[in-house]
Image 1 (tube, helix red, strand yellow):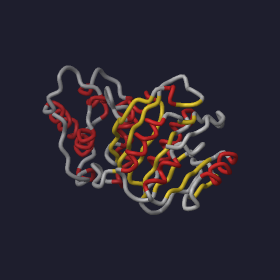
Image 2: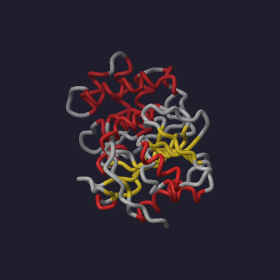
Image 3: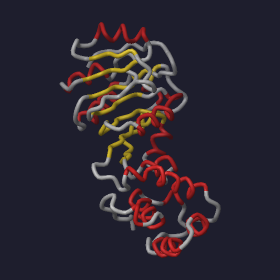
Image 4: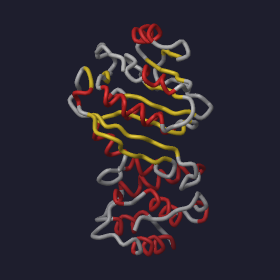
Length: 269
């Protein structure tokens, strides 16, 4: 394994310098398919070992200084692009994403990734709490629930702050996002589904029973009440307690026939 120098704390970047974490990231990327696009290559701590996978590799880096350094150190077959990922046009063919995301731009970058169309898998290193929330550890957040019908989120590992240089004030978290081959909700209904999730998460009431009574109207209200009663929750369920499949089922009930037919669904019991 090559040695990486610490670099500078440029543009919010905390350079990854822990070899075990580098190996863990590369191992996860090895399970994906297609060309690889790295977000924020920095000093090349991930880029160099990613070359061993013998797949087309593009490294996107915002720092021109790092770009020049990378081009001297990397194989000529690896493309190094000087660009801000938030403005970079992603490939129009299937590919995998990987990146140690700048902690101060994590939310913006995640939104950019989730709105993009062609990538199939993403291996991302972010703040620990962000990774936990995206993977719905301890309950789903609104953002995770809004994207669940189209993506699976999985927490892979906690990464200590000491794995980075400079060392940030919080630990990192390694997690993966995989595009579902068959979505739980039809993509054409994405806007309505996301509005529904927002309405439930921000709705007034003590638990889902009261929230849905206010959010859902007409004959669908009684259907949603019967569905909720059949889920077998213990105590008072909250929006965070619903699984991806349950969100899709509930949306199909309240949105009527237009929401049905997105794929096979089975609620968590």
